[in-house]
Every structure is written in structure tokens, then in C-alpha cells.
Image (tube, rainbow, N blue to C red; front, side, top):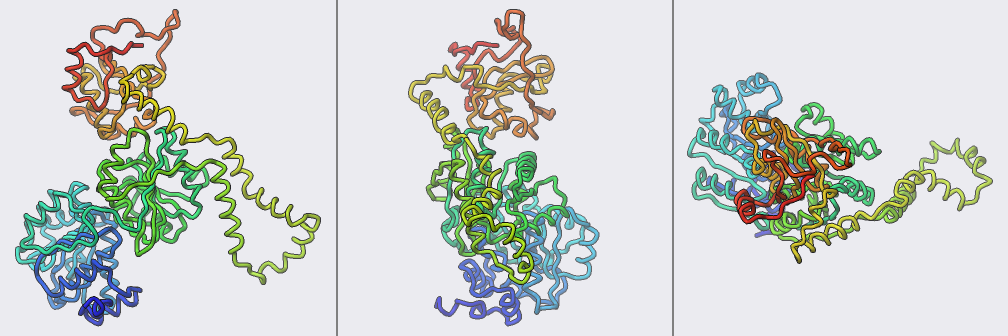
Length: 597
């Protein structure tokens, strides 16, 4: 039976559809396409299809729906909901290509950031397929510009992404307004509990297709990680990129500001990189994406939200500058490489305190991650040099175009031997590169020796002496204080929230009348301003910035190095993993005080 279903025509699709997809280069259906097409063509039963990103889910639901579509009814019969405008636009373009030889089929993509009036005009002219983001779709429904009374198929594409982006309420509102006798098709890469809730609430007696296993990564993706100190993260990123000269991939960052900073720094240092994030206009984003798809950009730096909808099949690497807080987000990130049967690599940069988070991700993807050593300067130079020589051997020599210049070149080089010419060209290409990595420090030694030893000391003996050394901490100014109702417990809670409950050692906390100071260990100091971006305390927006050094007294000590005043907090050492209950118990038991400045 499997032999009969090795091409699209054997699945029973219309000849016009088969012709269109053949012209697009489709030869045989992927497993999810084969199973979904068979189901949708032959049944009205609802369907949940679980398959990794990049396995052809758009064609899996579009082709059989287009096969069954009634073009004589010029009202929306198909609603496809996608998490982002980029993915929505991509789905609409794919559907347009699939209907190349079905000219009577009209579709429209509706999404924010574009003229709603233009979208309304297209709808009024008569459309069969509506592809939309939840927000814009709900807006059009409330304006009474979308009539879903004739909807026959409702598709939730990348449903887990929509839920992770906070569209649960919008989805509920849209789904409740659609006919009960429609066929609902839910496509997702993972199966979190919220997906199960939607399936049970809005789908009746649904079939389920699972390609591979639920909630795991793609089989042909290798997972590597590099462990460094937090302050060495960017230096490690550059070395990893330099060690892979043919890298073509996405670097995922946690915040918009971090994305901007990383992309700007890479560009200024000569790397072929650009960024997409929430502050980039749609026109600029489309310009960047066109260049990226044409491989005019080697590295795309992006936030998770901005990267949703990026559809590029031949990425060699995905680089996680930070581990995501949700392991399922990692599944989506890593699924952007290793597509279309090709191998891919997902690289993650972590510091010593992220081992627990890494274990959670490994459990999700059901794969052991391989620990790699950050390459040395010598290893990078050797790799780059051999890559350059390989490119030179493979370059196409255009004799006709250079023949007129060769006599002058030969004359210029006639007093040099072959070895001298080779050395000269290599030096011309690599002198600056070799100089940059001359005496480069071992980032692995910085990550594994001092930090791991300190962690082992703490675990084995409970020795906290090194953590109490003021030199291990950096001090920050926080723009809330006593008049805002802030307490030490509140400051700890804010730091927990800013660092997503990541284990961060906290030093002294000083609460003044209108502002506060707090300390965090040096390894996390560079991340504090960005981490506090968007954090709120009660009704106040909170920002943190590096505090100015304490002024010195005449005796050479810093002000505040005596006995702390009664209204000042911070005479206790707090740990960011400590709950408020733990801190209270510690005070009652007379926990060790940290000497104030």
C-alpha cells in the first residue's frame, strides 16, 4: 500500500493541484503530508497532527482542502490561523502557488502592521480562504467584516506557538464564533497541556497523527553546548562562528536590546550579520529576510517572537545565545535547522548555573547534548586558513577576463618563489586574523576551573566564604525605594522575575527613601540592565543600572562600612532561589550576616 502512495497523484489530488506542486519542485509527500492528505480528503473528522517544524505542514492541510473547496461559493470557507504575520504571509503565498492552475480560488492574508481597509476591500470582493493572525482576525470579526457562517475548515497552524505567545483568549473568542459542523485541523510541533485543552473543548472525536514522537527534536539535528562564564558569552559566540566558516544560521537572543547589541557588535567587527526584532518595521524586516534567504546575510540575530514564521530550509546552525526558559521553545528553535532531510546543528552557550535548565531541555528533546570546548585561537586560525585554501582551489578561473592582466602580474611576481607567493597571499588574508587571536585566553578554563571549583566547594562543604567577598559582586541602582513600599523580599522577587528564577547569588540590599541598591555576582552583572527591561513593581516601571562606586571616607573605608542603620535593608545575604518563607526562617534562626560595606 505504501508503494502506491509515493507520489501526490496517487493520493487522489486534482490534476491541477498536482501540476502546480510538481512545478514547485515537490516530488513525494512527507510523512505528515501523506497521512494528513489521506485523512482530510476522505473524512470530515477533526484532526490533530503533530510533526516537527519544517516537515511540510502547510501543504499537508492546504492541498486536500483546496481539492475539496467549492469555488462557486464566494464566501470564506477556510480560516487558517497562524501565530505571526510572517508565517501568515508565507502560508498565503504557498496557497497562491498551489492554486496556480485553479484560477477561481481567491485568498487573503489578514494581519497587523498593514492597512486593514485594504484587507477589508479584498474580503468584500469575495474570498474562499482567509489566512490570519488571531489579533487581526478577531478585529475584523468585531467590525463585522468577516462572515464565518460558511466556514467548512478551521486550521490552527503552529498552535503551540500561538498559545506560547498569549493568544489563548483570542483563539477562544474566534473558535466560539465559528460553525459547529466545520472540520477543525490542529497542526503543532509539540503537545503542551493547553493544546490538549483546546482539542478537547473545540474538537469532537478527533483523529491524531504523530510523526516521530511528541515533544521531541528532529532526528537529524545534533545538539552541542559550550560552557563559559556569563561575561565570556559574546567572546565564545565569535569563536564558535569563526570555527564554522560556512555557518548559515540564526542566533537566538532573549531580548530586543540584546538582539540589537549582538547584531551591531558582530557587524562592526566584520561579520555578515543583521537582526530582526520587535522594533524593526515590516518593510525593513522583509528587506533583511530577502537578503537572508539569498544568503547575502550569513547570520540572522533574532528574538523568538521575531523569528516565528522564518521559513528557510538549508540552515546549517541554530545558535542559542541564551537558553529559553521554556524547553518547548528550544524544540522550535532547533527545528529550524536539519530540514528537508539535511543535517543541522543546534548550539547552546551556557554558564555554570544553567545545568539544570539544560537537563530540562535534554529531557524534552530526548537527546543527550554533546559538550564541546570553545576552540582556541590556534584551532580557529587553522580552520579558517584551510577553508580559505579550499575556496581558492574550487574558485572558477575565468581565463578570458583575466588573461590581459596576467603578463603584468607574472612580471610583478617573477622575483618571488612559489613558496614566497603562497606565504604572501596567506599573510595578506590572515595577518589581522592571526594578530586578533594571538595569545587568546582559554575561555573553557575560565568556565570550568574557578566556577566549577566554587560550586563543588559549596555543594560539598557548604562553604560560602568566597561568595561573601565583595569583589565577587557588582552593585546596581534600582529606581524604587521605601516610599514605593519596597522591601528586601520585594527586591529578591524582582531579581527572580528578571532572571526567570535562574540561580543568581545576591549580595547586599540597601533600601533608601526613593531608590535602592542591590548586588549580584559579577558573572551576571552584564545581563542586569536588559533583564530588568519590562519589569514592574506595583504600578511602577523598574529599571536597573550600574551604581557609581561608593565614595571613600578619610580612613580609606567606603561609606556604609560601619554598622548598618536601622532603616536600611541588606544586612543579610540572600540567594535568588530562596523563597520569601526561607528568608523569614533564616532571620529567625539568626542566619549569618554579611558584613556591610
